[in-house]
Length: 282
Image (cartoon, rainbow, N blue to C red):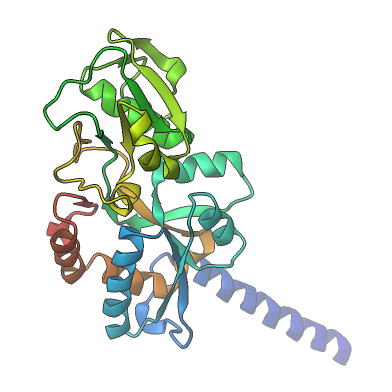
């Protein structure tokens, strides 16, 4: 009888513990006051604007009690692999279409968008043409060879009426989806990071803002074609699914989307980016 009573008590305690865990798991609102900020969180970025902005966010977050360690990656692939492996806590370098394409390719990656950061336009640059010049017939145009930024570049050209594609809103657009190329442009797919170095061999090329700035190009003045601020390619912070309930994420978001950081971003990169969140809601 005593043994039965003992087992019953153990079972009841176990059920109570499970119930408590279940209730906590359903609470989507993480309380920043309960955040364990004793250790720094590691955030992966690309060199350039993303790293510079994160340095500023780091300063703001420290005032709120959150320590951030910044880890730089020189490519677009490794930051998501590192995040999926738990080597970093979050990353800030990509837009949501790129993250979705990565997850489609790597379904084991349980990664999600946490919040918006900034829109870094992908513009068309040239060493042979000046802003206002018409892109000549037969021009050799370089675009990134990764699916999302390649499609994004084609949509920029389509938005200017330079080519036509099947669906001007389809982020999965490829060169095979070009339905009309009246100017007989030669579309050359290249590694995104290498495009600035190859401008001499191209008439013009689509270059991500990060790589453009690193190459000494001015996204506010140098493009011959600009991506508009209504683009669907706003950059994000990505995390593992479970991190959405981490109270530290709320502190991190408040620091990133603070008025202080927004003003710093616009002052530091005038004409080179658009703030990716609704500032009126802050």
